Length: 259
Image (cartoon, rainbow, N blue to C red; front, side, top):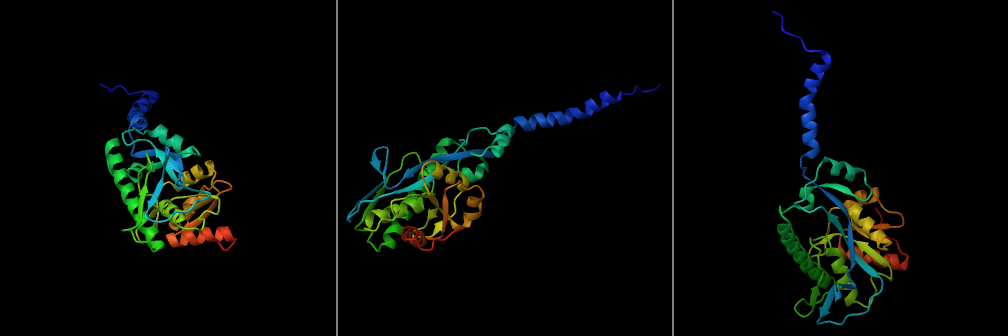
């Protein structure tokens, strides 16, 4: 008795079923990515929701001109399911980026956990920024008190801009020279600037909100240059002191570091 043979088209169709099942699963399966976009920017020399971002007591402050805009990214929340279609769209969109979820949310699996972590790292960043600025100006932290307010923004990446803003308010010399300066970077209490994520998206946000200069951690120069908006000048920095020197050179027409 002969075993019936399957026709070739039917045989190929049956073989393709497992592959088709895998493709369907890949399309609908959740992936460990977040989709990020340019976020808001805030002038730390101004106000946020009607209150000064920087308030200093115990020392004389001076009027400021220009702006120091800290930059952010906006990303899908940690409990949002990202699928293959979202990833493909993000890869080809000029104003989106596909980032490993762990790089956007290194701690926490829920919105509440992420908010708590971001609030904690923001507080630490503000403390370090204040320490670095007062140390730069040789001021006694027991006598000079700084309060930093910024709603709905978390994480440590505004540290450099906070320090620059504090220095600007406590010195007669105008740090910005009347220009709109944006940037990003963590900072330590000793004034060392550290790398952050999402720099290309932050440069887009800065250019959108009128900045002409962007202070970038030197380690992220190449990433920032790769997708730099027209009309935005990159200035690499490694320390608070170096950032202040670069801004002074911009005002005076001196030699300004470049990537």
